[in-house]
Length: 317
Image (cartoon, rainbow, N blue to C red; front, side, top):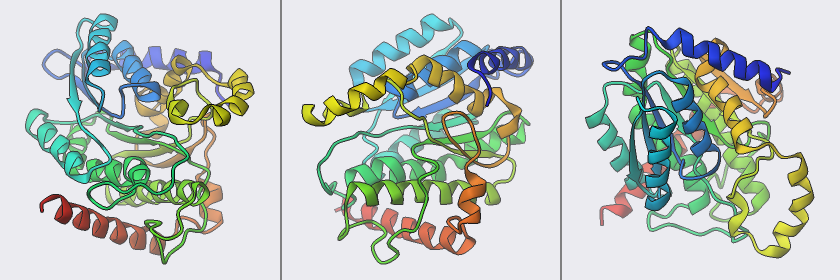
């Protein structure tokens, strides 16, 4: 396990290596989806800190937070070009709108960092597009953006620059899913939600890494981090969680680790990776247990494409 100081030291070293690559005319581009708070926000700050000339896109629903973050990014590094995009990632049509804007504005993307999400104890809550909102924001919306923006990530790989896709959720929680109810219309529970979204994200990471071998794809579990993700939980659920906060990482320390896997370390430059909060690899166990088979990859991705098509058909009415 790498110490935090070793990780930070490597991140500093990566800045020196970027000096000849990240320039005013060739900025390093990061897209942070779900970055108006928590892990996404602080990883964007680390990206600005360690990148000589960063060009950063912050995506979220809270315009006030977006404006604050853009200002702070420019304070961290005066060379930063930062833009906020207001989009609701529970909707596939909004994911497409974001992608359309970025495809028009950018020539490449070096990092696509996906961490949108919220935590509550309500059951299945369908969006206007017919998808459960939590499933949409933790899987379907994320991978719609990935699918749309991969041409830009490939452009970074063409230039032999860092080209990575990172989804932050629950690597290590993979396991058998309900093949007759993949979108959990009939068997929704927190346990099933966690299992399906973890499995789906890991399957997508492995599948896309095979299709795009010059890009690094990662599914990372953050561990316990002091963020506001539990703010929608009732007090009687939050209270028992408080003792665990003693062991929680700060958002700043977590961001050091996430920058390390996203840009700082060459170990994740290509291939598929499932890692926990200590950066231990979890992929081997998932493969050994049969959770990431090619058949599962294709079955779940076909289901995903079907959900995309159904959602867009509803949003166009």
